[in-house]
Length: 286
Ligand SMILES: Nc1ncnc2c1ncn2[C@@H]1O[C@H](COP(=O)(O)OP(=O)(O)OP(=O)(O)O)[C@@H](O)[C@H]1O
Image 1: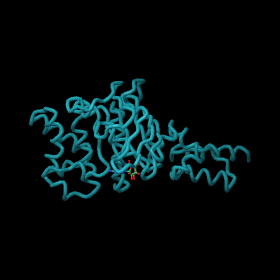
Image 2: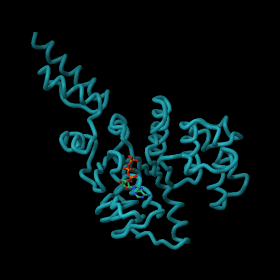
Image 3: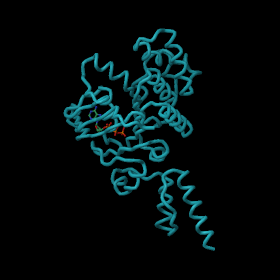
Image 4: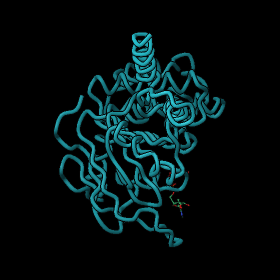
């Protein structure tokens, strides 16, 4: 569901931490309104550093970040506007949750944006329901499990109704069902019109959900395209310490080791179709 308009762009962005680590080395990254984009990269590639630029928490040393074609300005008024448009869910929910109860935590954003108490209450309930945490309103966030904290952190950003949601490893630390639920939620929000950008190591999830993928290594974007285009570059993927989705790896083994010419696919659904197609062809031969 992508329209042509670019909503967020990093243009030739360089960033150096105070200790001298050059974490971003000329990053170009563009997301169109309505897209669901995944940023893949190994540990230390620079994904979190890049994401912290998307709502002005970090400022590039060189290059610029543009929201709806306008470069971010770093005064507090402009940053407030940027943060209404772009909401970031941090990798570690403890960096985000601070209020005495889950309810108050999720209410913080909408109250700050000027919603009334009554409107905020409704928004908070909706956001907690969306992440399956409505039973936890009165609990202190520090009593929640890692996965529950993550869901509350997502609700906190959801409650601010941003146009773009940026999530740093939204599935890290979640059990498989919890991870699928979060991805289904993000997918649903995306289909309803929200632009979603996630970083992840989980190559199995990427082709199921992402319209487009960027791959980052050592502070640079090394390739970009549809999941199909990106995963076809197997050598590049492996050089960046990443791997193919497991189901694609199985097809690779069947092709190369067992000489079974099943066509490549990157999701269970694609590979199932390709296996059935192969079996049909084989049956017709006999
Ligand atoms: N506050 C900091 N001070 C100095 N160096 C930092 C700081 N934060 C990150 N770095 C360094 O910047 C580089 C990029 O780190 P970043 O956290 O952006 O990577 P990442 O791709 O998000 O990694 P991961 O997948 O492990 O979360 C790494 O070399 C890291 O050690």
